[in-house]
Image (cartoon, one colour):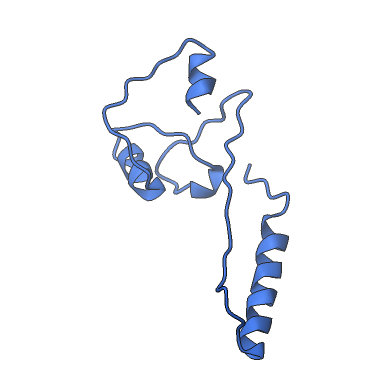
Length: 94
């Protein structure tokens, strides 16, 4: 994200940094901040503006136990993993 701005000689002042998307969105909604985040966070309060030449992306990860699960639980876990992979493959929130 910062490279997008520095490549365009824009350096917005940062007075607060958070790793929590909801907290950042709350600050923007209250009119005391700005952030870059995927359109999936649209809340009807904050304005979302596309940045030309910039598409925010997120990586998600799924993990499971190292030990073997009971068959029923293992089947459910595999079904869930398949659903998540299908849902997020090629998704575009524009």
